[in-house]
Each structure stands twice: as C-alpha cells, then as structure tokens.
Length: 296
Length: 317
Image (cartoon, rainbow over all chains, first blue to last red; front, side):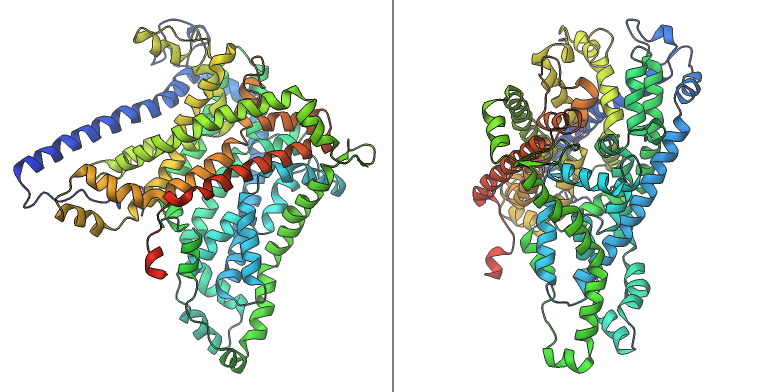
C-alpha cells in the first residue's frame, strides 16, 4: 500500500526444515547486500551534488577530490542565489505550479465524477477517446497549440502552462479519478438522490471527501510535473522575467560554465523542495500506482 | 488494462423504467454533461482540434509570418530524401530506445523483486532507490554533466579506482549515448515503483500453492511472479517506447545534440525546425512521422502480446 508497509512476506519458516531456514538466511543476506550496494550507487550522485555545492572555488578542480569539503562554503548558496534572480524564478515556478495543480485536481475530479457516477449519453465513447489520447505523443500537439496560443496572445505569459490543465486535467488523471470513484459504494449517491440531493451536492459533500487519497496523489504528481517541466516553459516563455527555475538553471549553466560550485548550489536549491515533498508524501507514491488498476 | 476497466464497471444497471420513475435519467444526463464539460472542451480544443490542424499543417509550408500554402506530400518527401539530419536523428533515437528500454525493463523488474522482500528497513531502501527519479530533469542533467567531466568528474574517478581509464564521455561521439543510458538507469525508480505495485497485487495463495508442490524460490519466481507480472512488464514496455522516442531535455541541456550529432535526438530535430528555423509545416510532418513510428512499434508489441497473461481471463469467458 505504501512505501513503508505492505510487502509480501517471504514464506514463514515455521515447520520447514533447518536447511530451508538456512537458505532463507543466505537469501536475506544477499538481498541486504544488493539493496545496500545499489542504494549507495543511487545516493552517491546526490551526495556528490551536495559536496560540490559546498566546496571552495579553489578546491573543486583538485585530485583526489574531497568528499567532505574543507572549508565548507555555505556562502556558495548566497552567491548562487544572488547571481541570478532566483527569487523571481521561484515565484514564477510556484505561480505556474500552484494554479496548474489546482486546475488539474478540480477538473480531473469533476470529469472522474461524470464518468464514474453519472449516466449520460455518449459517456462510454467519450471515455474511450480520452483514454486513447494517452497514447498520443505530446510533440504532435506542440505546434498547433503554439499557434493557437499565439493567436490568443498568450505567448510569453503563464496562461499556456496553466489554462489547459483546467480543461480535464489530463487523460491519466481522469482515468485515475474514475477508477477511484468506482470503488466507492453507489448506495451513498442513491440515498442522497432519494433525499433530493443534486449532482453538485453529491460531488462536493459525498465524493470529494471520500476521494481525498486520490486527490492527494494527483496533486503531488501534478506538482512534480509542473515544478520539473522544461520544454513547456522553453517554448512559451521568452522574456527574462518570466523564467521558471528549470529555465533559469539552464540559463545559469551557460552563464557560469566554469563556476561548477555555484551551478551545483543552484541545482541543490531546485532539488531540495521536491525531495522534502517526496519525504513528506512518500506513502502516496506506491498507492498512486496501485490505484491505476494495472495489477492485472 | 482494458480488462480491469471492465471489471470495475457497474455490473447492474437499474432498468430504464425505474430510472424514469425516479426522474434521474434526465437530470443525470444534464449533470453528466455539465461535469464532463471541461474535459469535453479540453478534448476538442487542446487535443482533437490540434491533431487535425497538425495533420493539415504537415501538408503545407508555414513559417508563422506568411500564410500557409498547400504543398501536398512535399514535407514527407523532403524528410526521407533530402534531410540527412532526419536519418541521424532517427538513428540516435532508435539506438537509445533499443538499449534503454530493455535495460530499464530488466533492471527495474529485478530491483522491484528485491524491494518486495520482507527485510527490515525496506522502506528506507525504497526511499533511497526512488529518490533519483524525482530529481528535476534540468538539475539532473547539470549534475550528470559534472559527474561525466572526464578529468574531475566522479565517474572517471571511480573507474580509475578499479583500474579503468575512463572515456571522454560527452566529448567523444561514441560514448555520449552510453553516458545518457547510464543516466537513465539512475532514474529507473519510476518503473520500479510500477513493478512494485504489480508485485504487491500477486495473491499470496499462488506462492503457497507452489510451496505445497515442493517448489523453491526459483519455481515461485518462474511460475508465479513472472507470469503474473507480464501485464505490468507490457505496460512499462509501451510507456518506455513512447517516452524514449520523445527524449528532449537531457539532450537540449547537456549536449545540444553534439558532439558531431551523436545525441541529436528526434525531438531535438523537430524542436529546431519548428522554433528555431520556423519551419512549422515541416516540423508537423516530422511529428506525424514520429507518431506513426510509435504507433507501428506499439501495434507490433500488441500483436506479439501473446505472452501477456491476464488473471481471470479464462474465468470470465
């Protein structure tokens, strides 16, 4: 169910013979070894990032490298954050991320409600069309939507990165919401209908509170998507004061080719919020994937 | 996937008469359309409409400033006969797809099996292994460029420790894509998590049955885990193909397609034609060629999907 719990237990030793128990112990030792070894490989690049971010400019190009910087230059962060308008980039990124995330959560839950709980003509066909758009490569839509936004006068504004997410919130999220709402007993709606409630009441007062886990998952994944997005802002945003963190970091990279320690400090600042979010919300990640009903 | 969608769908529908009697049908229809309206409009404005426009544009010449002119199949002909970079982009993309997808498929699966063990502190390990997958693409590109620095980067230092003289990575054409492949393996946490979701859905009684028959670890893996996981493997395979065909950010940030076009991915070619040379019509044709390629590949995979096992398929038919 979550990252912490819910693993399938290995067969219980119990009545099994001693040799069986010994194989199990060996098996467990191998598992530990592989987990630790691979885990170290996974985490070393991140430690290298942090270590490089804290190094003295004179100590970054020396061999062998120091893993623990001496001296520790916390100052790198201040220098990186003032060399480019980091505050503005962060503000832009947060604006886009929050409004796009809100749109995704609201409109995908509305569509999920329509597809899971209400009967209306054409429902199945429309749902199948929406599902099949999941297979559509994004680059096919890139050019026509660019021209559309140009005609609407939306280029170099945040609108192309926000408004589309208020119209359905993406096929995958609609699918996720529908699947989740399907698991909630229908009696609840029907009882409310008997009492004269309308669809809006059922959606707001009955389904939304029960769908909190699914809403949280969509909110988290959508937050990460918009926080990390590079190609969208690259295409639609042109002026310097509209840049997001992703664009800013890329720009920064070309500006400070040799000041690696500042570049690493800048990257660290972009990575940290997303890692904190992950650590807080990690139990939703596996849940989100289990929810999609891909198990069989 | 399709079978599970059906399985969850409501089994019993109230009869039309009862629906009319309660007066729900009319209200529900109106409400249904109203609630689905944003999605319906979005489907038309931001998806289906653009698909049609994109197809039309692929048969025309359009540079945003002057009106579009119809030129028939010229764009497609140009791509296949008069654009060397098109073939280079295709080659690079196919090379990356054909190596990364199987590698990720295999290692993600193996790691997920490892993560599904009941050992102490497993949640800690899962966190560590998944963490790289959430690192923003630009930050990860910047970091790996530094790691692959031939003289002071971490990669060659570690290789040096075990007596290997590290290559020049992104400076030499033949090691640039391998560098990107290593980088992609670092972020395999996403597919690992999808496998883990699948593994946790395997009912314990299947393993118990193998145990009663005297089967060991290998028998369980071979006769329960693998067949039960084929739908998930299938899903990851399709998604892997779709996403590796659209690689962009790494190439744009790290190499700009270089050195010597060694990392000149298809979408980079498309992006340059559309937004740097303003050849919107030609870029649309490139997008359609890409879509047809992905379609052909996924259809091929679907055709060969006899190896995918769906539990309950026999029972329901």
